[in-house]
Length: 115
Image (cartoon, rainbow, N blue to C red; front, side, top):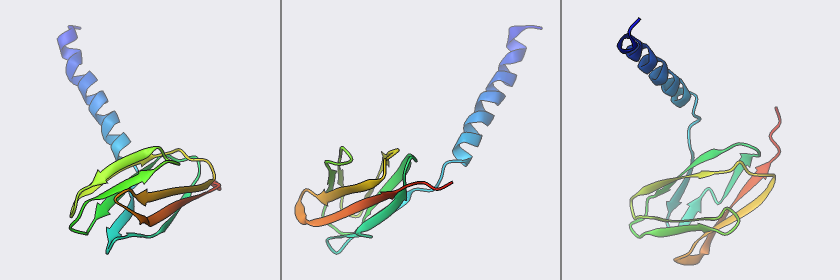
């Protein structure tokens, strides 16, 4: 069999694998910025899982989501959104804040993942 005839089969396998991997990705955890507050102010998440965190800013002014505990720092433009990946995290509490307004704070509380 000629190698050129194997190419469509190989490509079909690669694309079907990637499609199934995307289909199993869990939806993002959403953190909203509204009226100079994080909503919710406290997120509860399971331990040991890598999570997609969507930070959506409904305010007109930018916010700088910063967390020393999570080693993350990202500017969320006014009326914009950003996605970051967090974890897998161990059980505990992880603080975050708006570096442009230090009174705007929140936390992620990670609890043991019960299977």
